[in-house]
Image (tube, rainbow, N blue to C red; front, side, top):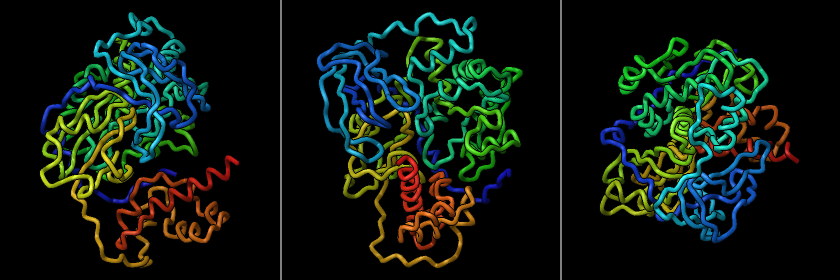
Length: 433
């Protein structure tokens, strides 16, 4: 079934962070890499070792193993506790920067024109390329499919309010974007590609830069300016008129984020591994707003001063700090967390928490009408509260994409997204057992 999203346009607040030119901050004093996120990691280096930029530090031991590369050259100092954008304190490996950016030659002198599909996929794997717009799924796992691929779809919708990191990345690396797009299609073994982008005024600038560079087998597909038009399933269904049950490859499609595309291009063309990305720094409590190109593992406290810091009178007690977008991001207690390859934004805005008691559910049904996955969030919440596992399964809690719409439209301001997310996690844990 091809689904239609509700006519829900959400104010973007994106203009605030694209007025100024982006900043480069690729020389942090130290970077910090999680030792167990998203799963267990196996260290490949010892404390005290000198390491080059792009050298393998550890390896994820999940279903699809991938290496974690050092974002800087320097010395491995040891293990420390740091905040992660998931709002969890965890063990991280500190690498002290020597500011030399001495880089491994693993990816130097690549010739993608002469490389086979398998060799291009191997570059994805050895470089640790992950999806930079979502859950950080290893890119090679998508492209190493034995199923026929009809289309490579680049998601440039950047659907959430405030976030403009993909917009900035493509605007300032347009030719590199097309270069990466070309070889993503080659890695997929297909001869057609699409760029999904919202049909809105601010995107006309990007479209006008992209159109003269598009090759004959590439096209731009416009999405409605509604939320969440950037949802993977919706973009596939809208651009191809095909659907699927679990993964886009069932519809003959591989979906990649725009920044992932550019990172792949940097590796192929310049031998530079995917260890940095643009991050949007924005919000009403910031003196200045914009985007910053930073290395993975950089402390946010090193970045905020580049934008003038907080407006006088604001601190972590008087602001709301969000890691990611306002719809799907995590509320943070402190600014002392680090960047990752999937972090798109840091939003620091005035805290408007209401002290009045919120009303109970009104039974209005807005959460169900607005759900792109056709769920009934309020009923899932009720089942969760009484621990009815069979009811949670029957209500399809596992299908939640945690887009945040149910909480956004709820007149009682019930945090349904968090509750349905808990139900989804519960079912996943029970299934794993």
